[in-house]
Amino acid sequence: MHIWEFCSTFAAAKVIRMLMKKYILTVAMSLLMVLPMVAEDVVYITTEQFRARIFDYKTEKEWKYKGDKPCVVDFYTTWCGPCRRLAPIMEELSQKYCDRVQFYKADTEREREVAYVFGISSIPQVLYVPVEGKPILLKGLYPKEEIIRIIDDFLLKKKD
Image 1 (cartoon, rainbow, N blue to C red):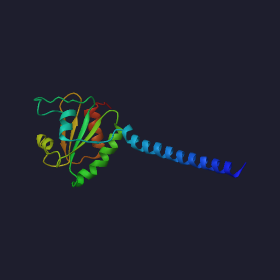
Image 2: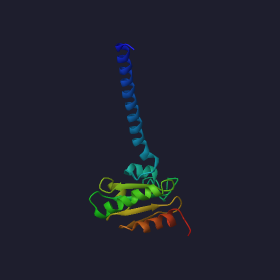
Image 3: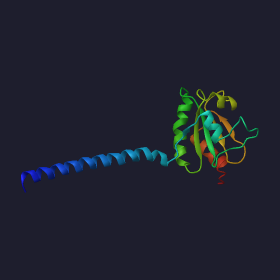
Image 4: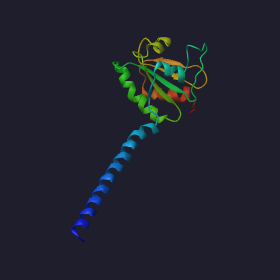
């Protein structure tokens, strides 16, 4: 093998290694962006999205849920201590119930209209919305076990 053949083979191998690194990096980055979409996370919802996905209080007189699976809406603010303690519980439960219950968060300082409509004057408050029937709105920070019981009994109608 002559020196110029060795140099061209070496250069080709270097280019192939560089392309493989780019390809692997692209695949890894793509997976990092797609994986969070596989499991349902808590969705931060605006007033307009609330009206489109849950209940349009401007056009409907009677409660009629728009979703196809029950949902939980956590009304919160960023500065609220109990709200910050509730957030990881809601994240964990959104993973546990990802195929059966949709989890939302509504920032009461940004989404004042929907907070006003539901009379949110203290936080956290959580709205539990079954597919059929009227929702319930509970004030305060409940233990995770109690939230699970509410989801299982009220939203999913599980019997022990």
